[in-house]
Length: 124
Image (cartoon, rainbow, N blue to C red; front, side, top):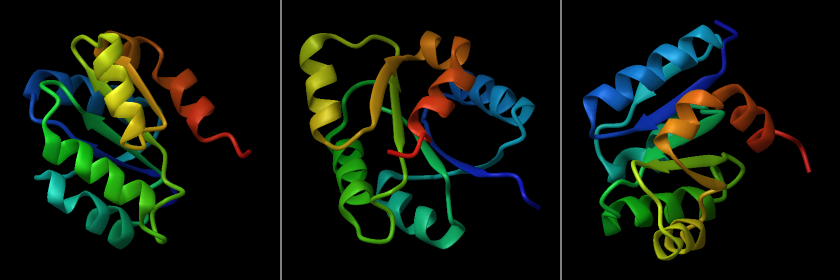
């Protein structure tokens, strides 16, 4: 089982199903995270390579989960691709301030998934 693991924190079923399908075609394993409070623990325990986080609705618990993931010593290296149906400038700023590696609209995640993964997984 050498396939990289992607975590998915998403409460919208259709979007989640589409993302799962696209990630599987890129040979990623998927683990669904049931709640924002579980994100860091799941990342540590399962050795995730990347996390996809649905920020639609801009729930404060989701932003806190991103912040915890990106500031924890065991998971700070894991990139977070945040996505929402729509992103205005204020929402984008809040999501990036929470520590997300990038934030994009969900259509961009689905259409440009391979490129996004390559970009966030580049070594500095």
